[in-house]
Length: 142
Image (cartoon, rainbow, N blue to C red; front, side, top):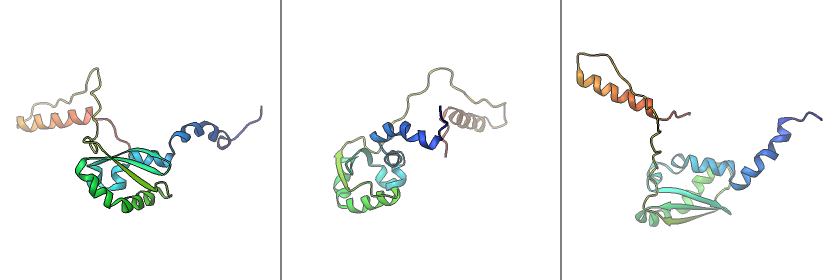
């Protein structure tokens, strides 16, 4: 048995995953709001990237506007990706486009925040609600 470097082994492991979706394409889907901006992200969602055609779901009224801005969006996407990943946009209507799906609450014990008695009861309750929200929200890594 001969020792091999990790760089020699890694392509065999990642090739099946990257055949389905490129790392840049996956980042495009994950960071859609950063790529197209908050105004467009509020009414659109990327659906599929295949053969340099990006399928974008959008709300009905936004489809016409996005059709006119298609060249600008393709240029923005390719600039963000750093490579010519998208050549065409295909728009499909979806009334739920742009809305983020909330994950169902986790089962089991949910952490809550409790504070000692304070002089201002409404302030204590507001701080407890804030603390509970922070404890129950998923940790976001930046």
